[in-house]
Length: 562
Image 1 (cartoon, helix red, strand yellow):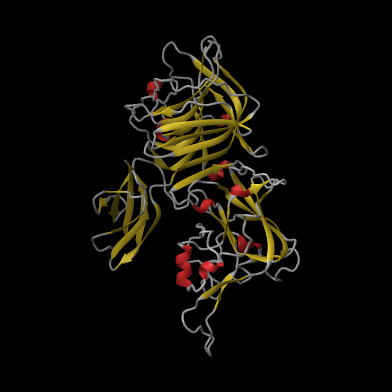
Image 2: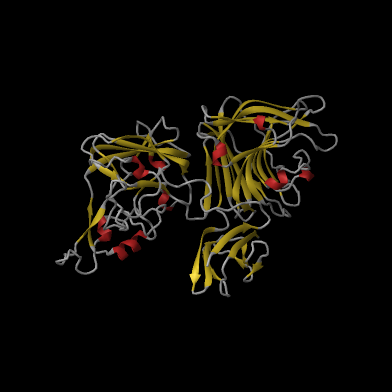
């Protein structure tokens, strides 16, 4: 019998996958020096790439009593040696990371077992530990970098020594850190079951925070994300089994683009005039032209979900303007917006989508900047929000605008966040960490319906379709870099299933504000629901087909945003 699960998202062209933006483990080794007094033969750098080994060559599972020890499982670093690995995608700081930790390093330490052996060298009784840790003595530092050139050491008073607590337990999640308050005393008398309970779903490893980064003077360094992690061994030796990024537990996903590698390989595309967007690998940013004389053009990335006003989400990016002009001629004396933000991509690519006409655009939440123009209009920042009914969110109190002129020739950090509880948009812009000024908070007005957003885009809008008597235009050049998008995760995550007797039983992690329908088909053409639609709970949902599963049966989860 063959049974297949197919996922679909209603009213959307989104294809859902379990890991959208690449692996959560080290992607490559940048450099490695084993140093001195390392473990001979344990120099295979492939051992630390990808997920740490779950079992040895004899088929024994790795656990806190039986660590990784094969030459293809661990990499040894001796005194004055080092190891640098690269992550792709990069590691980001996120509010949903447990214990405010961002990545984990795994070694081959293990707990001492206190049980005696019988004559056949089997443990007498259920193996348990005193809590004593068996590992190599070493002094280590861990450093991080965004560009592979400048590295910042993590505060040694906070960063744990590599290959100490917590021994790897493959029964857990490699992306979930152990509670860092647990000490060796916490495990005294624990069996494997007791250790598993204390790990609370984690696979162990020592966890680290990007926020611990310091410069050479010990001053804290603020990093949006990192792509590189480095281990230096000052004395002794350590064995490294691998690395993992920490996943959020609040259901959010973080999409990062630092333009180190070709963004096309990370899911970015261009719609419209491709000449308006240029990847600049040497500068690690995107060259952008905003030009109303050209058709609607977007540098875009799918969110792999749909956002509504019941969801909280945010965007942040570096913005550098070389030049900007509004009201370019007597026929176009007014300004037009420079924009980046969230959109309904299917709507935004329609020939009838004209940003210059308020009644012609639905489903937008974007950062808009209007430069001063030849008619005397002042420069202004205004979060543009349109609902599915093509209605503009209009704040009567202040018209939503903040009259600030953005500088040219200075790097800025733009952040815009929508809070679902207060139904407001908060915008901040800083230069060198200093705010350029207070920007009005934009609340959703009474009567605002809702939006449906599935894509982020750097947007160069056409000036066509403007209201009669209004001629607005813009021409600007600059760069966009270090994009960080924080949005809810896909509506269907961690999908799995199995036969329970002769009936198919499935499970997936659901999200609130979504309604789900389980459907099945025997030919992938005709689909029928097997149960009534049910709401998401923000937890794992288990469902079962009430009828015996036939050969060649297909199932799918249809998810609709409320």
